[in-house]
Length: 367
Image (cartoon, rainbow, N blue to C red):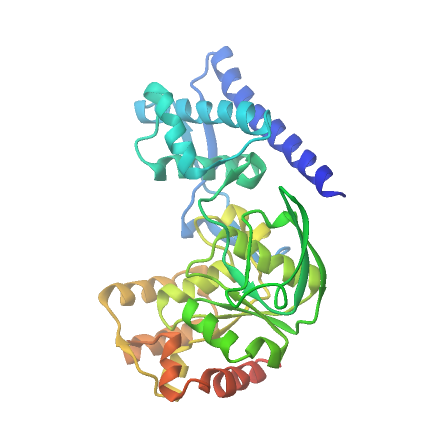
């Protein structure tokens, strides 16, 4: 299906489902019912493993948004305004807005305006869950595009100024190719990659490029920029599934970084409704492992109380319910230490690319 046809189909689906929600709320008024919508409870106690897609999705627990309370009535009023705006301005006129712009647009909605941006952000997420569509279908875009990638990949990107063919080593600077907010506008042309390595920090991403890791190992490097944007996770998933390229994730050695890996591989709790669209269950964790901290005697920082609480929380998180993660997390709690990716620099600037990653990736069967 051509890209124009894809867009038309996306618009048709979005219009159909958003209009359907508005019609449902209206029918409640006509039937003399108190308006309401049901949606999954968005907690870690309500995520379950989907064996068909190998990702974590929301389970059967639901919460009701109802006009029985003043707070609920205001929430549904704001929902109605957003539906009207998306249908008339975005889909009807082929326009788009950022999440930030939506917050300011609501200033014109009198008592329905949002008090803060997180409130409007959550409502857009609610509409994703109710409609089973991504916000890109509503022409909603983030403030920033995705992160960057660098490696032996040739692609074609549809832009406002026409299609562009880009080689992600030869046609870009050392900062790499900027992943757009909507990666469905990308077609893959060719690649020579043996694996993808998704990297948490900009410093390590730059180190691997400077050391020629991509050329020596036929690797596509993806900078996650901390907790990865939706477009970054979607890009990784597409490269893995459509091109058959294995994925590994390289982060700092702390509980917050393990959650970055989990968001790539298993799906994030906050966006479990999109796990099948964005998560890459085949992604493997490289490190920094707690066992690496011990084996390589890396420079460390002491775990804070928040770190300890986060690690203990992960022991009850179903996404980390494996022997491997239990062993690593318990080891980290025992040693009371955490380490950054850059700690490998204490062994020399080439240590991470000549020793640690080749050894670790060899053990994992990647190279």
